[in-house]
Length: 267
Image (tube, rainbow, N blue to C red; front, side):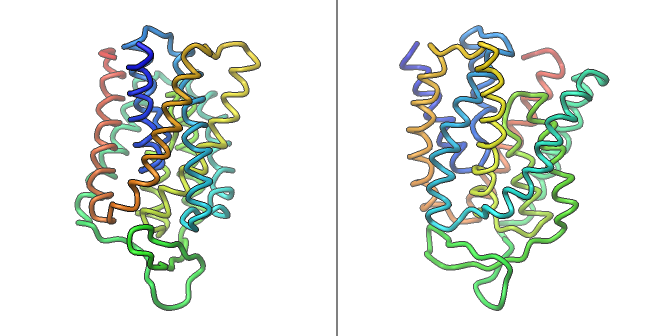
């Protein structure tokens, strides 16, 4: 069981580092269905894994000048507000309604990514507000962030999603940054990796003080996630934008289907 948990955590860490989603969409169903943990226990352990993934990947992407730390800190304001709002709204609205709403949002963004056929924003020429380095080509790509207010509001939804489901809000933040705010996909995933670590760490501290973190699970999840992070960040050098858009669309569809199954009581 330990080997299985480590293997799954490594896979989740790879996905989390590659796509800026933290790995919570893997941790939660595996810990609840496969290991019999309660929803609260699974969320607490999952946050530890997300922190491990984010700590390593954000440091790597920041050093390689891919993550936009300034933008990430700005959008975290909306995410934090959303986490609080989500906890309050969850008491007033049935969970299945919220799950369906988020699922539709994810499916729409998956469709938009597939339809874009690999096209991405940003340009290596001209004057731009921000720049990042493509790890595969070594090329510096410039871009300008658009719709900052709207993006912050969208991150409120991401924070609400995170607090209500126990997973990171990267599946919402990344497509919002890329399709709506004009951030190239690789920069968006790297920035999301940085952002979700802040949110997850805050939640993990609350669970720790409340004594709800099961360390016999958390230690292996953290180790596996960190190994996966190391592999995922190195694999990111091999992917071009076209491939990343396709695979991220698959991740969005998987997340949406998981939420619909949970809303229907299957999971």
